[in-house]
Each structure stands twice: as C-alpha cells, then as structure tokens.
Amino acid sequence: AKAGGRNQVCFFDPSLQAEVNSRTSLLRDLRAAVELDQLRLLYQPVVDRARRVLGVEALVRWQHPERGLVSPAAFIPLAEQSGIILQIGEWVLDTACAQLSAWADDPVRKAWTIAVNVCARQFNEATFVATVEAALARAGANPAHLRLEITESMLQSDLDSTITKMRQLNDRGVRFSLDDFGTGYSSLSYLKLLPLDQFKIDKSFVDDILNNRKDLAVAKTILGLASNLGLGVVAEGVESAAQYELLATYGCEAFQGYLFCKPVPVEALPRQSSI
Ligand code: C2E
Ligand code: CA
Ligand code: CA
Ligand code: CA
Image (tube, rainbow, N blue to C red; front, side):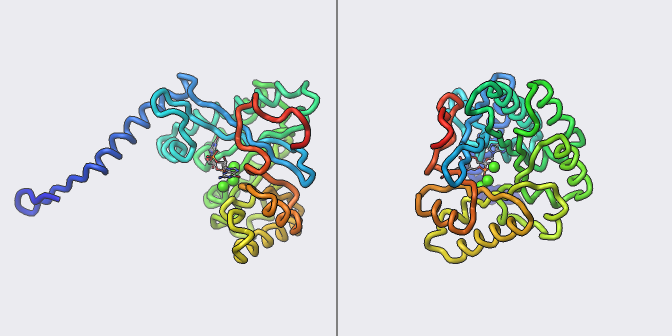
C-alpha cells in the first residue's frame, strides 16, 4: 500500500491485479468456447452392488488452446456469474441427449442413464423445462434415460415453481437426483414435496468414512432418510474397496468413484455390463 494525496491511499496488489486480468481473459475465452467447439464431456459410470453399470454422469471439461484441459471447478462459477452457463448447459444437455440416442441400439449401453448437472442459474430460467424438452426432442432421446442432478441451493428460491418444473419434466419420465446432499441447507420438509428419485452422498462424507465416525453417521443418516422416503442413493468419490463395502453394509445400492472408473471420454467407457 502506498500513501497518495490527502486522505487517499492507493493499494496495489500485483497478485490481485493478475487475478483480475486472468479472470477477464478467462471470461473472454469462455464466451467463445461453445462456438469454437472447445467443450468436452467426460462420463463416469455409476455401478450397483454387483458392479453392474447403471448409467453414467456427464462431467464437462473445457479444452482450452493454451490452458489445456480446464476443470469445471475453474470455470463453472464464472460461467454462472456471467450467464454463459446457459449456453454451456444447453450444449451439455444436447450432447448428453445425442449420446443417449446413439446408445439406443447398443446391446449394453441402451440400458444406461445419463445424469446431467444443472445449476441454479439454469434451473431458475423460465424456459428451463422447454430447454430440456427441446434437447430430448432434437436428439430423439428417451426422457426416461435422462437424469438431472440438482443441488440444495436450488431449493432456496421459489419452491412452488421448482416443484412445478420438476413435476413437468418428471411427468415425461425425466428423473431427479439431489446432488451433494448434506452439504447445503435443505429443509427436510421440502424434500418430501419434490419428485426426487435419488440422493447423492457427497464425496466429502465418503473420503474419511472409514476413520471418521461423524462422516459415517452422516452417510448412515442419508441412507436411512432415503430408505424412509423410498429413494435411491448413490455414494460418490468411492476410491477404496473398504469404503465401497462399508457403504454397501449400510444399504447403499449405487456407487461412483475412481475405484470403478474415472471420468473418461465416451470411447473409453466400458463395453461390458459389469466393471
Ligand atoms: P459433482 O457433481 O459433485 O461431480 C463429482 C466430482 O467428483 C467430479 O469432479 C468427479 O470427477 C469427481 N470424482 C468422482 N469420483 C471421484 C473419486 O473417486 N475421487 C476423486 N478425487 N474425485 C472423484 P469434476 O468432474 O471435476 O466436476 C466438479 C464439479 O463441477 C461437479 O461436481 C459439478 O458440480 C460441476 N460440473 C461438472 N460438469 C458440470 C456441468 O455440465 N454443468 C454444471 N452446471 N456443473 C458441472
Ligand atoms: Ca453431480
Ligand atoms: Ca456430486
Ligand atoms: Ca460433490
């Protein structure tokens, strides 16, 4: 900090300036990313207790010419703030639906669902339902094979319109998972009102589940609640056989994590029905 004129203090923090510059250039590049065809979808299998593949989660990446493969953590928040998430989200839906329809004739993959992450900014658009329906229609994909992953943050604004949108899509066969469950602030009374089909136990509860009794308690509570509400549960971030076995002991029926498969390009997905 450098003292300027009277009552003036001028701060100059080079690292802050660098951050502002890099954000500005990232945002400029992100605006062009969809048109320049720089987005990629990776897919990570979700398996049942017998390691049969139930479906995959679509996870977006940005193939930047200089920065390389950029992870969603590095650009989704910026995309959300700037509104670019709307174009990105539509691209993800279109690509996932096209993939579903390409799998319709595959003896193994025709049974798989694709789960797509949806953020609050997208979901809260008045046109959200129409956007999803249009993506399904363009691709000729079966709505029953599409799953949308929403988060608790979406349940904070207009609950009536959230329920209406979810019902409209659910009536067509689209299913909903509550992602990262337990990390947000959902009111338990809301949960029974929503046409949800599944909870996802966040990786942060799975990481230390073997050593931390509180994490185990949270996981068990989610599994118990799901069972009482008649919902399924997917545990994410399962990296060891011991985590998988422990979760299975407490009734978890679906699993996702590096133990089974990392997120991979479509060509690298398993061809067989169990992994
Ligand atoms: P998420 O929905 O919680 O996705 C799970 C994240 O955990 C993914 O990170 C996945 O690669 C990672 N993961 C899965 N299994 C393991 C494991 O065993 N070990 C470890 N270390 N990590 C594992 P990713 O792909 O970096 O995605 C990060 C987040 O970005 C996602 O978290 C999701 O919130 C968001 N995201 C990804 N794709 C999209 C998208 O298309 N649209 C929106 N709105 N958000 C997206
Ligand atoms: Ca997710
Ligand atoms: Ca998740
Ligand atoms: Ca997570």
